[in-house]
Length: 333
Image (tube, rainbow, N blue to C red; front, side):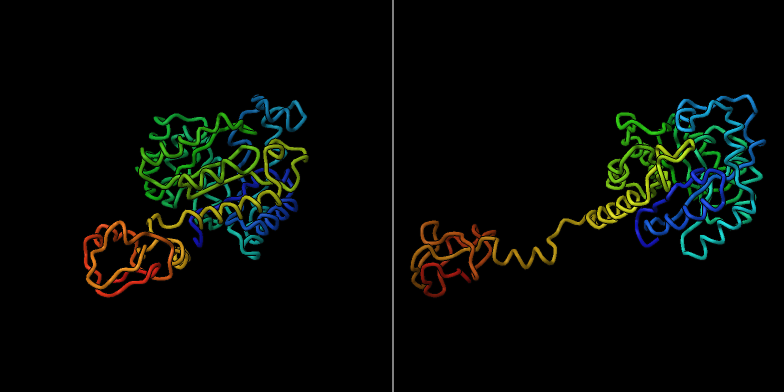
């Protein structure tokens, strides 16, 4: 990757079941500067029974009191749709990703050529699915919403035992939108300390402050829901980010990356230039004759074009002047 932070525009189901709208989301994601655009791939009958109610936020955001089955069925894209989307992403130069929610769709995505598997928080306890995903031996990005550290540990070990060594864990709070006070961003660092693996953040908050803070804390992946219009009908639009706001977030993240630097404490090239006229030097406080002893009375520290660094004060005091110095002249040995 060109940058340290891999930024995913999470289109998810914000295509509202339309392949044409999905392609528009790809275009918009590309323009924001995101590294990848990600969708969700599933067969509704394979992931849910017909009597499961919508979550409260889904009812609020869709404005419809229907079952989750009906909602998901209306948002399901075909494998042919995803082939078109993948080909389009390739043509415009943005990485296509999708989260599979069951094994058949996982097989399809692997066949389609995704470079990594994104596993959503909803599968964190799905042991057979995790084992199957791990057997593909592809890099895995695993979201950890709704889970305890112990549950993450089980999921992580299953992926490893199944054959996947390259695992990135995303801290996530599954709430749409996520209140700031429930983010618990320090948990991302807890994951890094516990598993000694790359970590990132899947953001469901309004605004970009938390995603940017995650980068400053070491996130190597940032994922955020993305839509063309937050007022559109659908379960995730209201908690998503518009193209303009997503573009601004990407730019801020890139600025933070540049500002983080390499961690070595040393002056920059520009600071070295400035230091020549800002850092104090040792100068003659009065006329000093050759052979005279340098003392705190006849030398001082000032900004000067010449003279030894003030850091050498203790080494200079007590020495003899090797030449005459005029008042204000920089002391050189």
